[in-house]
Length: 91
Image 1 (cartoon, rainbow, N blue to C red):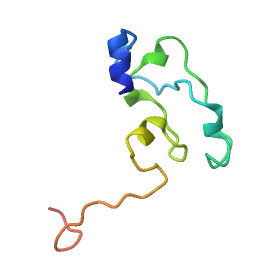
Image 2: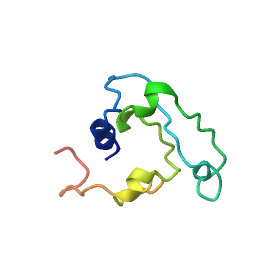
Image 3: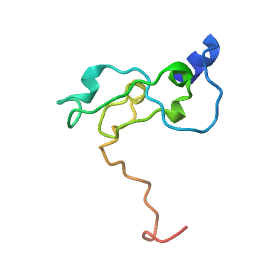
């Protein structure tokens, strides 16, 4: 959704590849009890603010607002995969 909003507004940076980016985020996300400890979140500047969501850095133990919007499980919660009939062998 973020990428679509950036594209429609003309702000999306089309660069492909490169380092992770750190878009602005509320400070409380990086402090207990929301996160497991204080974390540093260096907000990116310039065009990096408008890179695709694919490049957004994410701590697995900090709730991601985009994921919560669509009811995706948290990164620190194990998600069971589909079981394979006959054991764990290859398909």
